Length: 108
Image (tube, rainbow, N blue to C red; front, side, top):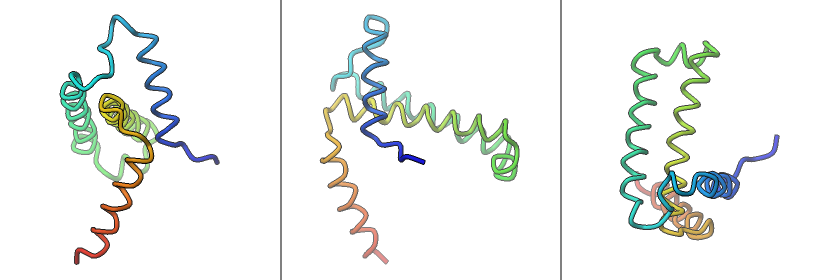
């Protein structure tokens, strides 16, 4: 199976925002805070699935699992919107991610 990249996600987000131009805010720094707040709200919905249904159902019940994954997708969509608002490139993100990984690998 082919990997699903952040670049692909961001292209999809850009396309969706173009489609809903006039209904949704433009992806610019001024709306990043709003996107973060929506992302936090969606994170709460992920947590609600865990609290309501639990780990066992997420792992074994297809409907619960699908709902859980759908909510995670909402989080990722807003995450990508924030990156797009600030014009964070994939290379910038990758570099920072690897640096943070290396710091964490030496932390304890």
